[in-house]
Amino acid sequence: MTTSRNSNGSGKRLGELALQIAGPVAVLLLIGGVWQGCVTAFELKPFLLPGPLKVLEAASSNAAKIAAATGRTALAAVGGFLASLAAGTLIACGFSQSKLIRTSCYPYAIFLQTVPIVAIAPLIITWFGSGFRSVVIVAFIISLFPIITNATAGMLAIDPDLSDLFRLHRASRLQVWLKLRLPNSVPHILTGARTSSGLAVIGAIVGEFFAGYGSDNYGLGYLILQTSNQLRTAELFACVIASTLLGIAIFASMGMIHATILRRWYDA
Amino acid sequence: MTQGEVYIRADQTGLSYDGRSLSLRDVSFSMQRGEFVSIVGPSGCGKSTLLRLVAGLRSPSSGTLTVDGRVPGDSGTRTSFVFQEPNLLPWRTVRGNVGLPLELERQAATASAEVDSKITQAIRLVGLNEGDDGKRPRQLSGGMRMRVSLARALVIEPEILLLDEPFAALDDILRQQLNEELQRIWHQRRWTGLFVTHNVAEAVFLSQRVLVMSRSPGTLLADVPVPFDFPREPSLRASSEFAKLVGEVSTQLRQAAEGAA
Image 1: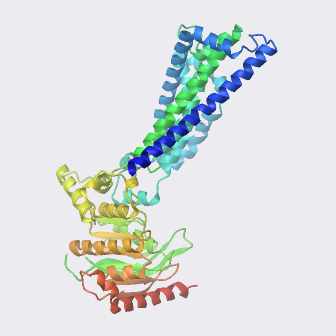
Image 2 (image 1 turned 135 degrees about the vertical axis):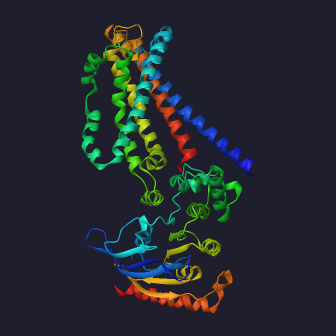
Image 3 (image 1 turned 30 degrees about the vertical axis):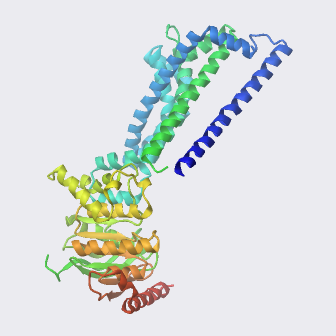
């Protein structure tokens, strides 16, 4: 009986999955059709708006270049993201230790959130030079804030009874942190990490606008700027699509990691 | 371990949270070593707060409270606390949860084999079996989680066990079963037990004395001895003496609830 219910369940899930794929694909085809139709009917110039077929052509003829650029941008985004995951958790650890630290330092954490990254990117290049390192730093700065706030919230959201339990058994500060605050904050950190991972991709691309110049190792940001300046609009479209796919891929992987960890080790 | 000497003593104990509103007022009682006493009282009368004072988690703002003649936190008495919620760590297995107090108290001298056997013993004592050792809290029913919580409290072989309405969220049959097991374990181990509940039948079934507390600010109104012998059988609940005593305590509890209203 269990087996039949299971197979029913998975059959249902397969059907749902098919719908989830078929629906968006149908919309994509529709938009593509209308887009191509407009371009053909109004004879739009390709440098203003290339048709989807032209974009596909540009994508396939520059596939290797775009793929390499996407790979480099992905590397910078993941690097910046992992750095903010580590640094954000450490900063949150400091914040969770005392209210004094929290109230004194929080305004400067908000600074990370509000500073226009476009404005300080040139400064970063002045300090760290053009290239990959500066791109990682921009991705890091832009993705740090959600980790800090979520991790801090998680480390502070301790059931008072559990605090009492640890106190009753004379737990040290380090034990409270390692055995209670840190594991308790993991679901919160993962929620922050989902937001953060998306921001890191944006950060990497913006970083490349400024810092990706003058090297053979360029990423999507540099490619977007270059193709835009040279009015190679079909190629520009291909790069924009590649950036979007990269964002989705990173966001979806984070979502999967999030769900897996919660299912295995937490209540949800 | 001489019987008859005072072990826990509260003398005119009072507690105010913010210096103005009182949550406990002039509470005085004493307990002998190895005694099992229940406290019943209306909601919000400060019963749980009193347990936290005995645990040394809070300090009284007036009067004194001593365990073995000393201030609770400093007395070095092995004390365990069972909360209303099981409060297990979801990321730890049953074994990991039960072993937590041993880890925290870092009895460095104890060999890991000994720690292992203490954990196993505590888990078996509360009626969980080997198949449950590796499960995580989310895989357990409410009753099983409470058993794990109880095992976590027993693993350090406490001298004092404080229980704060531990079975309040369970259905009646399960509550009765756990009452019977708690009573059996107490009879074996003879820790000093202080049990807070608002279920009078539970208090009478488990304890040697029932203390009745008044509404906030809580103070003690009555100290009712429960004369039944241990070990107590489930059939005790059906006896007329049991019903009579439950009725008496209930009347006092009603008066306590209405008195200050």
